[in-house]
Image (cartoon, rainbow, N blue to C red; front, top):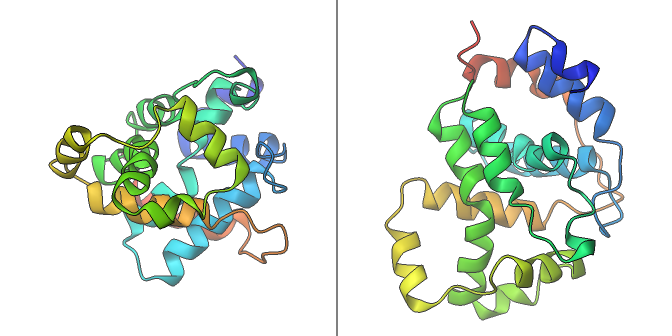
Length: 188
């Protein structure tokens, strides 16, 4: 347990985690975890997404920070950050925030199966993790995935996720999203 984990306000805890631990490099992408999160949230915001989907975009990779697993893929391990993150956040947020997070890895596998050209847009790190995560979905997996709630939001989040790796992007500061995230939480 870190000092961040002992804060009484969960939203403050999450924002401190992003602000303090998010400066680590995001895999081989050339951006930090925080830059990646802010770019994904900015893309969601610019597209007119719901508040819940903007928050999901900001927080979609929190599982990497919660589990401190950033080097797992380099070791050939899938740490299931999507499960870790959605489970962690589900204590304070509704399914409209946590389910797109939970499904964003499956959405990558789905898009690679149904839009073969999508796979050509994957960064080296995303391609590497795709193989650890099971590769493109089978036809049966595609049908099961399509039947799940929040699939459309997960697919939108996945597209923003892949596009959130620009080391030159200018984004709002983290606190720009604080009131939005706080408004969605069940923390009071």
